[in-house]
Image 1 (cartoon, one colour):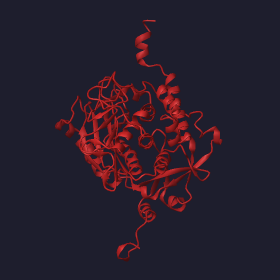
Image 2 (cartoon, helix red, strand yellow):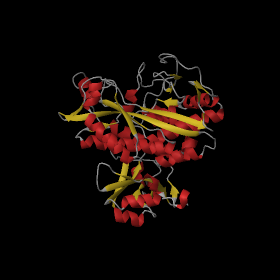
Image 3 (tube, rainbow, N blue to C red):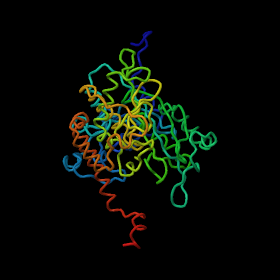
Image 4 (tube, rainbow, N blue to C red):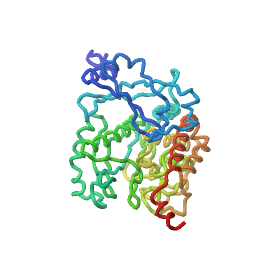
Length: 437
C-alpha cells in the first residue's frame, strides 16, 4: 500500500486505462537503424493479448532503411526466418498526440522466450546490467535536424541562409515548434528549448536529461515526434547527417553525467576526477568502434571534416568543440560528439557507456587534452563505413560488452546498405565521366 493506505497505481493499470480511451494501439520498437517499426492493433485486441505478446518477423530488426534484407545477420536463414515476439513494456504507454484515437507502447523483442540480443533496447540493458558500480548515470541527447519543404521535385530548407540563434529566423518556425512543444508534454519527451542552428533550415531542440534507458527511449520518441509534427505542417524533418553538400551536417551530441552519493563522479569545476579521466580514456581507446555505431551510413561520414565542429580525430579537450570528446563548461560531464543525428540512440548510449566503463575498469589514462584544432596532432577517425565496421568487429572488448550477436547483426545491416549503394550511379559520376572518358 502507498502512503495513506491508498494502493499504488501500477504501470499495467495506467496502460489499461489509457488504452481503454483509444481505438488503436501501436506496438512499437526500434530496429538497428533506430527507425520506429510497429504493428497497429485494435485496442480491445491489445488488451486481450498483451501479456502473451505479439508475433513479429525478426528480419525487420536488421533490414536497411529501404528494407533490403542483409545476409549473415543471425536473424534470417540462421533461424529459418522465424518469428519472435514483441513484449510490451507498460511503463512506456503513451497517447499519440497527433491523433485522437491511438496510443503506442514500446516493446522488447524475444525469441524462444529469451531477449533478442541484437534488439537495441536489449543491447543497452545488457551494458547497464554488466555494470556493478555505484555511479548513477544520466544522459542528455542533443539532436540537430533539418526542416525542409518540398520544391521542384526536391527539398529546400524552410529558412534561407545561415541564421544561428537569429531571432526572426527562429520565429519563422514558430507554428512547428508550438505544436512540437505542446505535443511533447503528452508524449513524455520534455522539450525545453528551440535553437536555429548554423545551417539554413537546421534546428536543435533540447529535452530533459534522464537515466540511460529512459533517455534512449526519449531520444527515440523525440525523432518520431519531430517527424510527425513536421508532416502536420506539410514539411519534412530529417535527421540525415548531411542532406546537402557544402552545408553543415547534423550531429548527435551525447552528454553523460554520473553521481555517487550525491557527488559528481566525473569531477568538479571543470576538472576531471580519476573516474572521469579514465572514462575519457576508454572513449578514445574505442573511438574507431564508436565511429561505426555513431556514424551509421555512407552519408554520415561526409559530416566529418578537419577544422569543423564535426569531429575528425580521436581527441578530447576542455570546452573544445573541435574535438571528438568534449568536457563542457558548467557541471562536469562528458560529451561524445562523434555520433551523427541519424545514429541509433540506444546503440550510441550503450557503446558510449561500454567504452567509458572499460576505460575506468582497465585504468586507461587519456593523453593530454587538446587546445585548438587537433587535426594532424591526434589519430584520425575512420573515413569510411568499411573501415569503421572492421574496427568495431575487431574490438573484442566492445564486442563482448555489446554482445557478439548485436555487433554481427548491426554490421550485416550496414553492409547491406553499402551493397545497395554500389548499384547506384549518381549524377556526379555522369557529370565527371560521360564526356571525359
